[in-house]
Length: 234
Image (cartoon, rainbow, N blue to C red):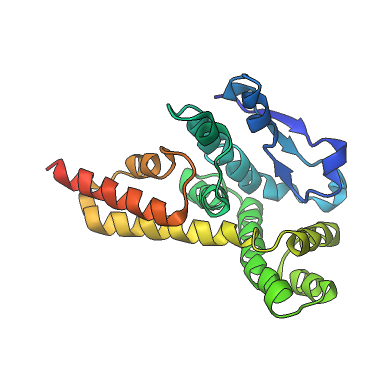
């Protein structure tokens, strides 16, 4: 379905470091179709926002990322809660980050600059594992967290300040991105090994997102069931 691109609303633009597809769920809850969703791009402080990051951001937020995944969930023949409200960070954001990885196979990063944007985003999510744990388990100060991000990512100082404030106020949430992506890639490798020439990438992706957002242990069960059904086809 169509995904409209709009500037991020002013009330979010100075606190949200990147963008969000925040219009989709609200609009469909009002009875509007998923095609009315909007991808909101943060256009504040453009001098601090590298354009080479946009391909990775778009893959994550739009297609094949959240827009694709959430639109499929909203088409499920199940309860309104499951269609519109059920969400598990490691699954949803794991799919978003996995979608950035898929951009490699899709040929999205066709210049060194775009590849740099993807690598910058990957390093950013990996650093979250360190910083969130440092703050909430190791007693890090905000200054320590900011310094680590400045030393180990390509993000601007403004983005890092907003990011670290988010980690402080939302313990554990930022860990779900990388943990979920690693799980999906692990399951894909497992399915490729188990099915060998019978492995179908489209079928695997349908098995991952086709039942909506689920906890990662349930996703394990879904993929094992899909592998068994593929083997049974003979």
